[in-house]
Length: 319
Ligand code: PMV
Image (tube, rainbow, N blue to C red):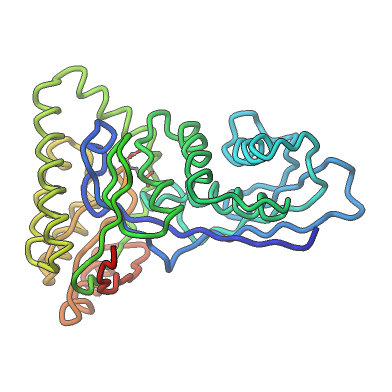
């Protein structure tokens, strides 16, 4: 078996995180500039049946057998072996390198699982098709997040902008204008499982208030989708701001994210909001070529630990 490598991108939720868990639509885009890479090589002199995993960013250097049962990489590997009906673990070394910050709202866990499953299935001579890969990646997301919507694994597997709604066919969407974004990291790590559980708790105490907010976010997502498809950047920015206001009302933002968001808006961003689980992690700002530099400086001086740039190119649908 030759050395095999595969990779997967990060993701950005443009509109609709959290409400998507409750069946509302959400809009997500790939963040192709930030990636996870997985390399697998045969381990000729290794102990037979030993799959050794190294992942420097996760401080991991262990054999598959020694990983705790609830480890998501372990689960990703066994899911592939099960899917391919392979009972004997291949003797090999798997190295995972991630540029995506962990617990920061950019889909790191889903991207790691997708890259590992892509690489392993190719290494074994049976590369998984996206549909199957997506189904398996969703299983690992369940392990990580408890009650995931499935949006992270879906946008990462297909690496295309999409409107996602639980249990509905994926709707791929195309921007009718170039969309430049800045993504800034608050530096605060927050596990998605925690914020999802936090909202579920709030919903138990006050279902009417929380459901009303969730439903409003769903409507904003559909308005945002129209703006995305028509290239109406002003309306898309307004949708992002309206979405952020509702997320903040649900106490899913935090002072550091609020600071970055208002700095971006003051510097000329058309819209700004948290992205992903919230209460930390990253925020997202929609900019223009004219405002991009000013917004970047504002984010840096307000304390962002990293600022990334990504741009969705205008793409005309042919379907
Ligand atoms: O924080 P991330 O990158 O895992 O994004 C989570 C998105 C949520 O909507 C909060 C949860 C979900 O499963 O959709």
